Image (cartoon, rainbow, N blue to C red; front, side):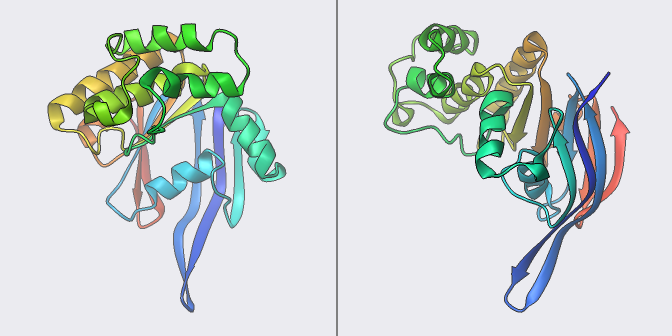
Length: 226
Protein backbone atom coordinates (compact mmCIF):
# COMPACT_ATOMS: atom_id res chain seq x y z
CA UNK A 1 0.00 0.00 0.00
CA UNK A 2 1.24 3.49 -0.83
CA UNK A 3 2.16 5.99 1.85
CA UNK A 4 0.01 9.10 2.23
CA UNK A 5 2.40 10.89 4.60
CA UNK A 6 6.18 10.62 4.67
CA UNK A 7 8.31 12.62 7.10
CA UNK A 8 12.09 12.71 6.55
CA UNK A 9 14.81 14.18 8.81
CA UNK A 10 12.44 16.76 10.24
CA UNK A 11 13.78 19.50 12.53
CA UNK A 12 11.95 22.43 14.08
CA UNK A 13 13.38 25.11 16.36
CA UNK A 14 11.91 28.24 17.96
CA UNK A 15 13.76 31.31 19.17
CA UNK A 16 13.15 32.09 22.83
CA UNK A 17 14.89 35.39 23.57
CA UNK A 18 18.55 34.83 22.73
CA UNK A 19 18.19 31.05 23.01
CA UNK A 20 17.19 28.60 20.32
CA UNK A 21 14.82 25.89 21.47
CA UNK A 22 14.77 22.63 19.50
CA UNK A 23 11.21 21.31 19.54
CA UNK A 24 11.63 18.41 17.09
CA UNK A 25 14.75 16.70 15.81
CA UNK A 26 15.55 13.75 13.54
CA UNK A 27 11.88 12.81 12.95
CA UNK A 28 11.34 10.06 10.37
CA UNK A 29 8.18 8.00 9.75
CA UNK A 30 5.63 7.01 7.12
CA UNK A 31 1.86 6.54 7.31
CA UNK A 32 0.08 4.32 4.80
CA UNK A 33 -3.20 5.09 3.04
CA UNK A 34 -6.26 4.21 5.19
CA UNK A 35 -4.09 3.60 8.26
CA UNK A 36 -5.07 4.80 11.74
CA UNK A 37 -2.06 6.24 13.55
CA UNK A 38 -1.55 8.03 16.85
CA UNK A 39 1.20 10.31 18.13
CA UNK A 40 1.60 10.22 21.91
CA UNK A 41 3.96 11.78 24.41
CA UNK A 42 4.07 13.96 27.51
CA UNK A 43 3.14 17.63 27.43
CA UNK A 44 5.86 19.60 25.65
CA UNK A 45 7.15 16.61 23.67
CA UNK A 46 6.36 18.29 20.33
CA UNK A 47 3.16 16.40 19.40
CA UNK A 48 1.06 19.37 18.29
CA UNK A 49 4.03 21.00 16.54
CA UNK A 50 4.57 17.78 14.59
CA UNK A 51 0.91 17.61 13.58
CA UNK A 52 0.99 21.23 12.39
CA UNK A 53 4.06 20.53 10.26
CA UNK A 54 2.57 17.34 8.78
CA UNK A 55 -0.58 19.24 7.78
CA UNK A 56 1.37 22.11 6.23
CA UNK A 57 0.16 24.63 8.81
CA UNK A 58 3.78 25.42 9.69
CA UNK A 59 7.17 24.97 8.03
CA UNK A 60 10.11 22.93 9.38
CA UNK A 61 13.64 24.34 9.64
CA UNK A 62 14.95 21.33 7.74
CA UNK A 63 13.73 18.00 6.44
CA UNK A 64 10.88 17.10 4.11
CA UNK A 65 7.19 16.26 4.39
CA UNK A 66 5.37 14.52 1.57
CA UNK A 67 1.58 14.73 1.98
CA UNK A 68 -0.81 13.07 -0.48
CA UNK A 69 2.03 12.67 -2.98
CA UNK A 70 3.13 16.32 -2.78
CA UNK A 71 6.30 17.71 -1.22
CA UNK A 72 5.04 20.50 1.09
CA UNK A 73 8.41 22.28 1.00
CA UNK A 74 7.94 22.95 -2.71
CA UNK A 75 4.61 24.74 -2.21
CA UNK A 76 3.95 28.33 -1.21
CA UNK A 77 1.40 29.20 1.49
CA UNK A 78 -1.54 29.50 -0.92
CA UNK A 79 -0.72 26.16 -2.56
CA UNK A 80 -0.50 24.48 0.85
CA UNK A 81 -3.89 25.97 1.81
CA UNK A 82 -5.39 24.67 -1.46
CA UNK A 83 -4.02 21.16 -0.76
CA UNK A 84 -5.48 21.23 2.77
CA UNK A 85 -8.91 22.33 1.50
CA UNK A 86 -8.99 19.49 -1.02
CA UNK A 87 -7.34 16.63 0.85
CA UNK A 88 -7.19 17.27 4.61
CA UNK A 89 -9.69 17.28 7.49
CA UNK A 90 -9.10 18.60 11.02
CA UNK A 91 -10.59 18.04 14.47
CA UNK A 92 -9.23 20.31 17.22
CA UNK A 93 -9.43 20.13 21.00
CA UNK A 94 -11.24 23.49 21.17
CA UNK A 95 -13.73 22.66 18.36
CA UNK A 96 -12.98 25.84 16.31
CA UNK A 97 -16.58 26.30 15.21
CA UNK A 98 -17.67 29.67 13.79
CA UNK A 99 -19.95 31.14 16.51
CA UNK A 100 -22.17 33.11 14.09
CA UNK A 101 -23.02 30.03 11.99
CA UNK A 102 -25.46 27.23 12.82
CA UNK A 103 -24.30 23.63 13.17
CA UNK A 104 -25.43 22.94 9.61
CA UNK A 105 -23.63 26.01 8.24
CA UNK A 106 -20.43 25.13 10.12
CA UNK A 107 -20.35 21.67 8.54
CA UNK A 108 -21.10 23.10 5.08
CA UNK A 109 -18.24 25.65 5.09
CA UNK A 110 -15.52 23.41 3.54
CA UNK A 111 -17.95 22.25 0.84
CA UNK A 112 -19.12 25.76 0.03
CA UNK A 113 -15.50 26.87 -0.30
CA UNK A 114 -15.17 24.19 -2.98
CA UNK A 115 -18.42 25.29 -4.64
CA UNK A 116 -20.12 21.93 -4.03
CA UNK A 117 -23.82 22.26 -4.96
CA UNK A 118 -24.66 19.43 -2.53
CA UNK A 119 -23.14 21.24 0.48
CA UNK A 120 -26.38 21.38 2.50
CA UNK A 121 -27.48 17.85 1.62
CA UNK A 122 -24.11 16.33 2.59
CA UNK A 123 -23.99 18.39 5.80
CA UNK A 124 -27.47 17.22 6.85
CA UNK A 125 -26.43 13.63 6.20
CA UNK A 126 -23.25 13.93 8.27
CA UNK A 127 -24.93 15.68 11.20
CA UNK A 128 -27.56 12.94 11.21
CA UNK A 129 -24.79 10.31 11.30
CA UNK A 130 -23.26 11.92 14.40
CA UNK A 131 -26.67 12.03 16.12
CA UNK A 132 -27.44 15.73 15.65
CA UNK A 133 -30.34 15.77 13.21
CA UNK A 134 -32.38 17.83 15.68
CA UNK A 135 -29.58 20.40 16.05
CA UNK A 136 -29.20 21.69 12.47
CA UNK A 137 -30.26 25.24 13.34
CA UNK A 138 -28.52 25.50 16.72
CA UNK A 139 -25.57 27.86 17.14
CA UNK A 140 -22.38 26.68 18.93
CA UNK A 141 -23.39 28.61 22.09
CA UNK A 142 -26.55 26.48 22.26
CA UNK A 143 -24.63 23.18 22.12
CA UNK A 144 -22.87 21.16 24.81
CA UNK A 145 -19.12 20.41 24.51
CA UNK A 146 -19.86 16.93 23.21
CA UNK A 147 -22.30 18.26 20.63
CA UNK A 148 -19.79 20.88 19.46
CA UNK A 149 -17.16 18.19 18.96
CA UNK A 150 -19.66 16.07 17.00
CA UNK A 151 -20.28 19.06 14.71
CA UNK A 152 -16.50 19.42 14.35
CA UNK A 153 -16.17 15.72 13.46
CA UNK A 154 -18.95 16.02 10.87
CA UNK A 155 -17.26 19.09 9.39
CA UNK A 156 -13.90 17.28 9.24
CA UNK A 157 -15.40 14.59 7.00
CA UNK A 158 -17.52 16.93 4.88
CA UNK A 159 -14.93 17.49 2.14
CA UNK A 160 -14.22 13.71 2.01
CA UNK A 161 -10.56 14.17 3.02
CA UNK A 162 -7.82 11.70 2.15
CA UNK A 163 -6.27 12.25 5.60
CA UNK A 164 -7.71 13.59 8.84
CA UNK A 165 -5.67 15.10 11.67
CA UNK A 166 -7.23 15.12 15.15
CA UNK A 167 -5.42 17.12 17.85
CA UNK A 168 -6.48 15.95 21.35
CA UNK A 169 -10.07 15.41 20.09
CA UNK A 170 -11.30 14.40 23.58
CA UNK A 171 -9.20 16.92 25.52
CA UNK A 172 -12.10 19.19 26.51
CA UNK A 173 -14.67 16.44 27.09
CA UNK A 174 -15.56 14.28 30.07
CA UNK A 175 -14.65 10.60 29.80
CA UNK A 176 -18.06 9.28 28.75
CA UNK A 177 -18.64 12.01 26.15
CA UNK A 178 -15.07 11.60 24.90
CA UNK A 179 -15.57 7.88 24.35
CA UNK A 180 -18.74 8.51 22.32
CA UNK A 181 -16.95 11.09 20.15
CA UNK A 182 -14.05 8.66 19.56
CA UNK A 183 -16.47 5.91 18.52
CA UNK A 184 -18.11 8.29 16.05
CA UNK A 185 -14.73 9.39 14.72
CA UNK A 186 -13.59 5.79 14.23
CA UNK A 187 -16.91 4.69 12.66
CA UNK A 188 -17.00 7.57 10.18
CA UNK A 189 -13.33 7.01 9.42
CA UNK A 190 -13.84 3.30 8.70
CA UNK A 191 -16.84 4.03 6.47
CA UNK A 192 -14.99 6.73 4.52
CA UNK A 193 -11.65 4.87 4.27
CA UNK A 194 -9.79 7.98 5.46
CA UNK A 195 -6.28 7.95 6.91
CA UNK A 196 -6.58 9.07 10.54
CA UNK A 197 -3.77 10.67 12.56
CA UNK A 198 -4.56 11.40 16.21
CA UNK A 199 -2.38 13.43 18.57
CA UNK A 200 -3.26 12.50 22.14
CA UNK A 201 -1.92 12.09 25.67
CA UNK A 202 -4.67 9.45 26.20
CA UNK A 203 -3.08 6.01 25.80
CA UNK A 204 -6.49 4.32 25.82
CA UNK A 205 -7.46 6.33 22.75
CA UNK A 206 -4.08 5.64 21.11
CA UNK A 207 -4.62 1.89 21.57
CA UNK A 208 -7.63 2.12 19.24
CA UNK A 209 -5.33 2.98 16.31
CA UNK A 210 -3.18 0.54 14.33
CA UNK A 211 0.19 2.11 15.18
CA UNK A 212 1.54 4.42 17.87
CA UNK A 213 4.47 6.81 17.54
CA UNK A 214 5.93 7.78 20.94
CA UNK A 215 7.62 11.17 21.25
CA UNK A 216 9.76 12.42 24.10
CA UNK A 217 11.77 15.61 24.19
CA UNK A 218 11.17 16.22 20.49
CA UNK A 219 12.55 12.85 19.40
CA UNK A 220 10.93 9.56 18.48
CA UNK A 221 11.29 6.96 21.21
CA UNK A 222 9.70 4.22 19.10
CA UNK A 223 6.91 3.40 16.68
CA UNK A 224 4.90 0.29 17.50
CA UNK A 225 2.00 -1.70 16.10
CA UNK A 226 -1.00 -2.08 18.40
